[in-house]
Length: 231
Image 1 (cartoon, rainbow, N blue to C red):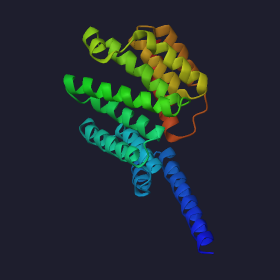
Image 2: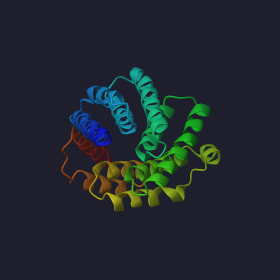
Image 3: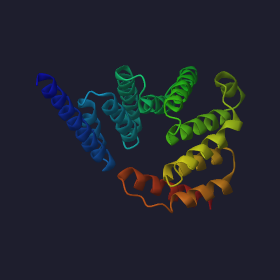
Image 4: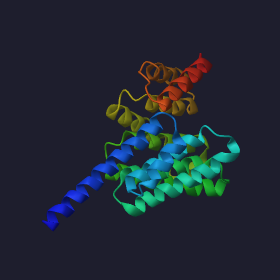
């Protein structure tokens, strides 16, 4: 009887944790990133901490530049905690890479190149653990595009390859063809290569999808603004 009671108790705890994670996700989808991060981190699970990292990184896009670096560092810490709790959590590696990518924008040249190397390792791990994670392929495409655009020193130091830009984006879009942000980031990579017509085509596609969450609506507005500049 005791064993049955213990099993039922664990099942209830698991169900409650999943429900709490869904509640945190709902807050995030509404744009309440601070509440979402706090609720997700409080769960103290790998999935919760990965969501806290995602919400914190996204939220940094809404605050003043002077506040961004601290938030990216906090997101990085959440992601590292998520990995410590579950070394097989692909989302945790992806969120660590995302936070590192944003943090690199606020770092010196040497530190940013170091972060770029760490970012690549974490993205590779995310793909290894979850070969169908479209977001990781988008990030890999952007990683190569951004570093290639910086020239020979950056590519030599990191191993970035122009030939890896389009294949990664095409892989992501084949996995999630109706996710607008993948198209928007693809457009950004194409713009870095001077391919404005191709970028415009991706943005046109992006704004044709139905945006529902707070973040999807922001992405849609970003796509429209970028498209207007290209015309």
